[in-house]
Length: 483
Image 1 (cartoon, helix red, strand yellow):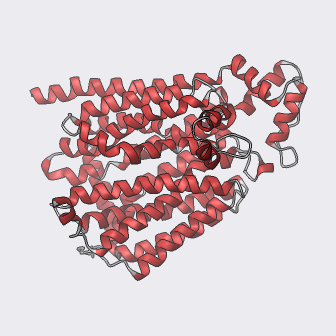
Image 2: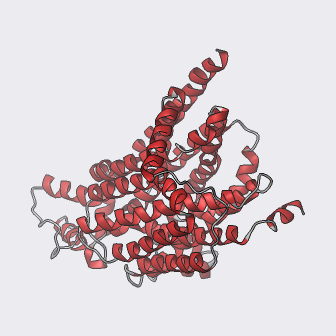
């Protein structure tokens, strides 16, 4: 009853902000969960045919910048007003998604994605600030609980709808994303009311200068700086969910086994999520993570609520390391349901505790200042995740590169992939030259070149993060407490 009473106190703007967050996450994750596939897939199927290295650099640098920009765009919103900034953000986002679905060259995609990132960076701080300013001390906890639930609902629905649309045409997921943002533009113009806010009248240049000065002050706390550097490791590992796993599933995992397993006890569901060929698309399997979060986040949060944040992070990050490592060790896709569950439980336990921990270790008069640095390790994590999913995965596990190695070892010659000789044509030609079917070639490459060894990279990053956090707790924090 008390919860319902609190819910009824939220103003209309609170609910409008949550609906806009739902549509924005729907659009973003609908695009982002497909992006690695879209960038690297064969051009004869409507994708762009970039290399893994190009994909990694593009995604890592742009998304890394996206997570850093809110430190600046928040000041812009405070200066010019939330509603105006949201309108500008939605115009950029809606046109940005359309542009991303239209351009074909690497330079054009870079510009389009960077343009979209600016819109996303304008949006991010405004919505979270709106939730904060339309809540009270008594309702803030449930308010942000509703907000994060909405985030995950959007993150679950968007990829599923986008996956269905991409089977028709690869342009449609981008059109869908643009349409969701246009709905937000209508909502903000008609229904959004500027929340109570002390407008900042000082020059924008001075406000931004103050922000960077504050970040510098926070980072001069060596313990805090070390903590943020350690957390970069977690986000680097975590983001392989989006940067690498879809490509790995597409290249190596036999999803017919998952389809047949589901069909054996629930034929209708298997047909609903599967393809006509009896497979399940990679992005739908990756999206299981969001499904688990929607179902289990409240339960996991309640189980760890009384555990020290640092201990919860160590346990959560270790589970993530186990889960993500297991993704890559087998071609049998049936295990993904279990391994993604292990990863999701770790994510649900550890990730939310990062912000709570920052609030706990910050000096009482600098809590907001330290909280403002929350996105810095996420920015760094995306950047390094891009490099690993590009150069490292490309060299160790990318099927196209491994085929090139095998062709060279055998002294054979095959044309390079180009506009007239697509990736699919390349793989088909290589299989014929090797005297194998495509499936036999995949099995041969797996047994000969061991692309599954990419798990060692993810495990190494995760274990280094966990061990570093443990040492940080025992040596740095314990020593500080003793002093």
